[in-house]
Image 1 (cartoon, rainbow, N blue to C red):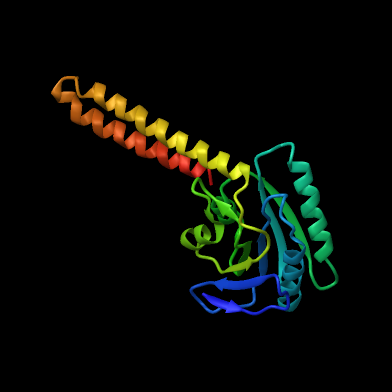
Image 2: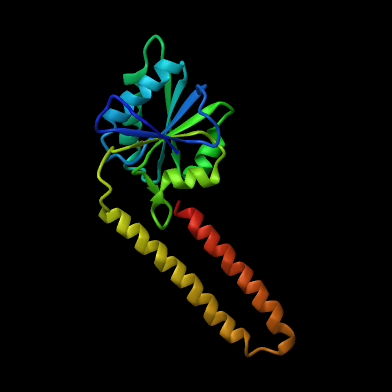
Length: 211
């Protein structure tokens, strides 16, 4: 991963890509939670777009209808602050939790994704940049030093809910397979294979629902 110096002492930058970075046609900026101060990010994104002539698309996820109006206002403010004669910007709020699916649905050839190193996703709260690097073939521009990486109560609640869900699925299917073991032998193997397949499918669905 190539480290780049910037003019912002509190904001470090890295580019993660298999190829040498080229001027992007569009910057897809993943906007995190409302608590983060994105002033430095907005300024850095404007500098990138101004230098390369790229269009900016601010993208955010929201599952809370009460927070959605505030999030839309925030993205509108960010769009207005970077828009001038040389730079154009738009904003979109998507309902959901899965950043990978959201980016896949919006990315186009020549796009570069911009995210913050402190953004986390999934039931294990992995860095979003790592998830995007492993699941997407797209140039990634990572901004770090944005805000502290302290775990918030909401993160702990999300992790607890995730582990409870996994435990319930595994325990439920374990008890089901114990009952299956008492059935006639002709049915045991077929039912065990079927229930195991359903178990892995539910784990996959639960994991993706929490991204």
